[in-house]
Amino acid sequence: MSFTDGGIQAAGVPIRDRLLACFVAVCWGINFPATALALEHFPPLFMVALRFALVAIPALLLVPRPRVPLRWLIGVGLGIGILQFAFLYLGMATGMPSGLASLVLQASAPFTVLIAGVWLRERLSARQFAGVALAVLGLAAIAVHRAQTAAWMPVVLTLCGALGWAIGNVCSRRAEAPNALHLTLWSATIPPLPMLALALVVEGPARIGRSLTTAFTAQALPAVLGLLYVVVVATLVGYGIWNTLLSRHPSNVVAPFSMLVPVVGVLASWLAFGEVLDPVELVAGGVVVLGVLFASRPARPRSSVPAAPITQPA
Image 1 (cartoon, rainbow, N blue to C red):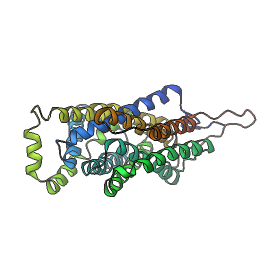
Image 2: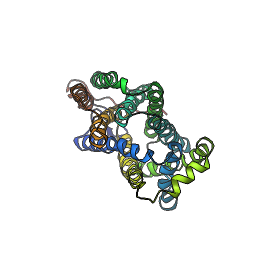
Image 3: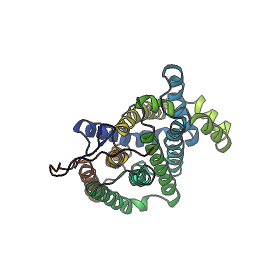
Image 4: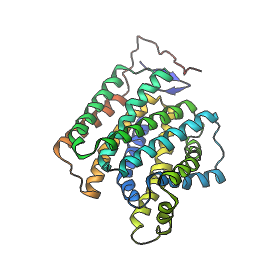
């Protein structure tokens, strides 16, 4: 049985949108080793401010403000821009391997489904529940297998980042932006100033100044390239497409695709840094892929039961 929400098909995700979601997963998976390279040079809190400042400045000058309530714009910037990346970068800077970070951060998918169910009253079908549960099982298997490679605090920090991402996802869905790219760009205006102030207090002007004055040296080139990848590909391209998908489909349909990210992230980290990829992780990664595909598969229509319109709560 299918239903419509504002004229948008929500029973399943069209092939085009599934491919777009998979493309975002590849972009975000590669983002983790790129971030690890950038964090070798830039302090984590300052890197959050710098990342979003590079997006916010041209957005303020060239892009019209999205036609969404201010509270949802701030919510997206706070959840995705500040909470997600401040905690993620702190976790990675304190010893979280990039491959394992790509895994743990995907706790955002079940967090998103839970928050959307309570806040937006989005219904989770039996198929979606089974698919998400299967993907979570795969993620849990990888987490148990790799837990020995990370200390306790980096894992907790990364989980906090996942919760921030989930909050941003639901705010993005609630905003229903006519132009999702404009929402992505303008949400980047929220983090720079508070994160810069926090970085100055925690990391200090001297450390921040050194990272800037040495940014154009040969030694810093990999870090700068990593930062550019994070800004252009992961932020502009990745979140532009992601927020577009969230504007078309319920959060509990889009969010499971984020669980494909650790499959790419673990593989990319193995290629970049030699982080070991063994058969257990390969099998568990396959389970994640299977769960996401199953959760996003359209339900078979039943001709005997008429479609029922469901609307978002006011």
